[in-house]
Length: 201
Image (cartoon, rainbow, N blue to C red; front, side, top):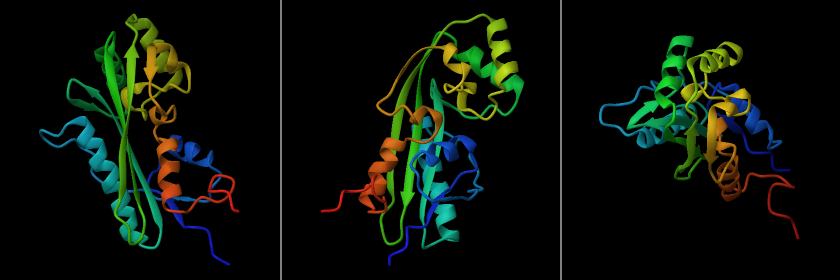
């Protein structure tokens, strides 16, 4: 009998792991261990696309027989890539800079399979920030501590209250892993079991 494809998520993000679990597929998580700094003159879109590919490539070298999924996410603030703030002060400064503005959140996806060219796409999400007083921002940060979320906004929790609107064709993209596009890629690689895969005759 054929065995299920060996799927690896090149990430240690709990958000991406929780999203991947929705598909009901067996997989492992492996840390990609790459430098995620934005390069000089690199746009946020190019930055997240490159990092998603590099994450997948790094893990694929360690597991050449696996199908490896890499993903990266940035917020585009006037050409600057806002990623994970890391601590309270950085998170507050990110939120302050975004108040009353509309930003693009780019979520890149790269899937590397043996003997195949990489499958790569970037899913955009338009995020419209409310203009809120500092005390509301500080209370949110103290309550949610979203220091591992790009732009310090966790839309799956009370962070949604900071936004006036979200526009995307994939609601999971803003959380960190665009599942609709990922399913497209996994179908193309013929590694989805029923009922997600193609119905047998």
